Image (cartoon, rainbow, N blue to C red):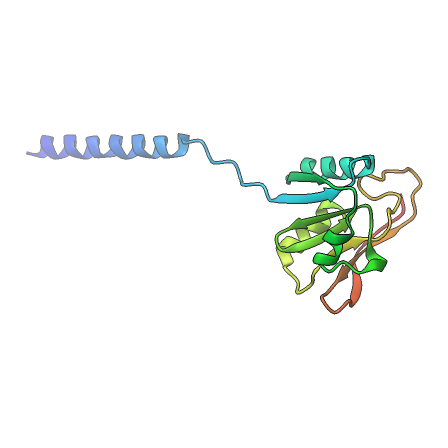
Length: 157
């Protein structure tokens, strides 16, 4: 009887080891990438470079080329003084222009009560506008009432 109990215990131990080995050997699912929907004009090269920047930083991208972005900006509440060369949507937020991926990640992590972020104009030194010796620039948060504040400051390069 004692011999049978030892065999059963050994068999159980082997089964546990095999089960744990199989469980750990299972491939882990790749994390689901957040998709940024980008609206841009077909001839804008810097917008394409910003999309590449976002993809290199773990985002998937869906790009729609349009001759005029004013309707998209109006629909999503981008103030006219904060416009840039492309408008993007992600996680319920608007991203206007060359906002760095690190700022978008922070936005999605913190989830502030704002409409979105903008890098107004096309600031030199921002992703897609990589120019050595560029001045500092700010990324601006804006809300539905048009209030703005600096979300992130990026130093000169």
